[in-house]
Length: 324
Image (tube, rainbow, N blue to C red; front, top):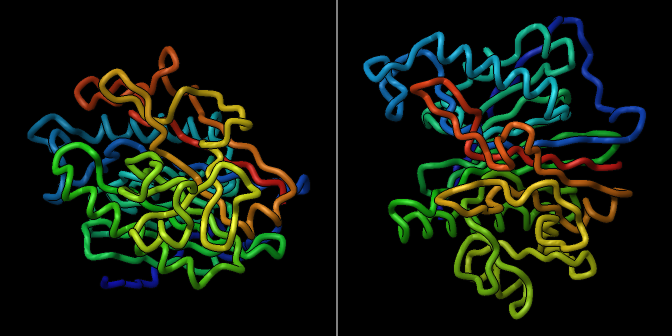
């Protein structure tokens, strides 16, 4: 398995004299959102656009600006998070255009993307200055972003991914999802004392046996699951060990505000997840997780329609709040 590590440049301060804080809010809360934007393409035609996001097919600057305005209002009114991780954004320009003066005044001073050569890459905007950002590949078409923050003396490492879809080339995509899982397992193996989150669009849900990207403990052990190139997850915190992750969406004791994070062909799926390692779970005094359904219609994600310009995304954002 080949691993690519690319140090990315970090941007931007609203004022060059601004000294970024590394302390959480006075209430000790840290909030993180993961959100698949559903093919958020910019207004520059550079040849890598998916259909129908080309000028020939009717994509325009006006439609793009309307989409960016909607997302900006959602960040202001609905997300209200310290760090927001996006999937399916075309370029760094999308984040540059998103962060107008109103969002900078709210503290969003930093942004970057994982891969400038992938038209549906991952990236983030943040109120906190990352210590480092790097991108890692497993030989497939999509990179995993690793970002590190130090907040109130917590060393927080966040892996962001957008796994290949279940739709289309099923077996090939499944193999790439497993390669991504193997890559993440190899990376986190060296960070067991850090506080780690794996988040993003996994495009699969945990199974009982290690045949895909995420596998629940029982009947298999963490080691057996990792050996099968899957990420071991559990829903009981007392089952946590340094090799597996707690998945709040699996925990029946955690109240959720929606039926799922993604809606397709009449069914809900929890593809958008945030996984916590043992160190983070133990060092956080409490947490909450919410599926942000306000952008949907009748409890269903309001899929964006590039022809009419209506809608938002076919995914709901998911928000994790940590009490540090």
